[in-house]
Length: 72
Image (tube, rainbow, N blue to C red; front, top):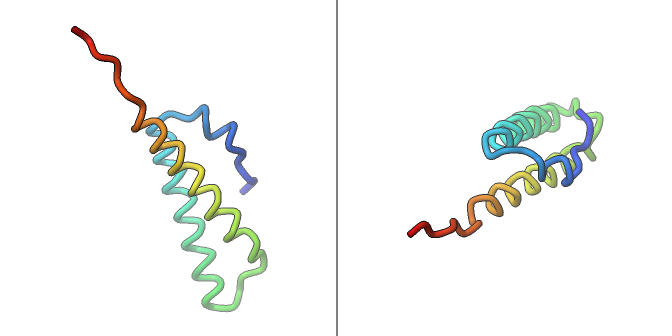
């Protein structure tokens, strides 16, 4: 899987960000299993995934913390 830039993450909706986060966590889980069984070839990918997950979570919190306009 290719590295995702923050600019592409900025354009995703809340549902897409949630799905992307789950997908990234699942891939990270599989890499941890490979690491535990000494079959991991691309150890740098774990660090990339953690950063991409952080980007998704950051964007989700930015979206959720936007103040809603008051309607009177």
